[in-house]
Length: 274
Ligand code: ADP
Image 1: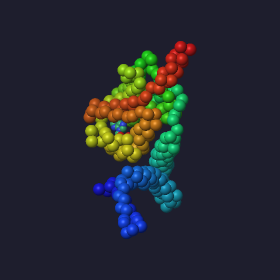
Image 2 (image 1 turned 30 degrees about the horizontal axis):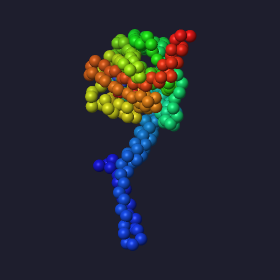
Image 3 (image 1 turned 120 degrees about the horizontal axis):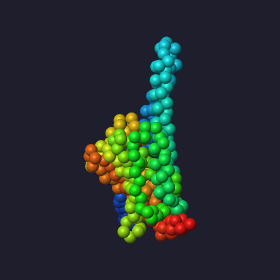
């Protein structure tokens, strides 16, 4: 298949003997292939808005086409939106490469997720167009600290909550829910929405870079197709994993399982007592 690559090496040894080595290069080939696909996809995603912006500038520059103020304003709005989209893409690409670059450094701050969730709630409820939505939070009373990278964990929450707002139906609440497993070792953080849901055949592919169920819709609501890829990277960097469950026409829950370090639990206790 396209992903199978074998390397055959034949070495002549002294007395006419030949050493034949066959090695499986499939995984490094697949990794290289993924990298080149990614660069091609990213370039394509950036080129589309760039071409639109250039096109509108050229139209505005053409003195022959007498443009009224309304048309000019409309063109400028489109150009602004396209530039905005490019900016979001570049920011997401930079986040991804930063997380990858830091892959071998263990994040080590004790992070209070309940505070990050409260900040995210404040941010979303203050942003335009989100005022008709409830942001429900349900956390355990003994919410532990997570040893991690504060800004990355904030971004993880922000990406999940932003998807819940984007793909949840107008007027329905989004919910952030956390539970601790029985042994006290794992925190499960879930973000749920009441939206159209995702068909099962898409579920395993959602964390691929630039994979979208409905490209037009994702673009129209300001998606970059990188949000869940970033969430997956951040979860893995924290020794955690991601689980997505969805019921068509009911909604989606994305859960992140994060290890609770012993010292993190101690930190939380110290903070609670002081
Ligand atoms: P995007 O920027 O397009 O939202 P993501 O990586 O965050 O990119 O998500 C990838 C795709 O997964 C989205 O385009 C959308 O099709 C689907 N998706 C993500 N979250 C949800 C959700 N809560 N409900 C329905 N579909 C979702």
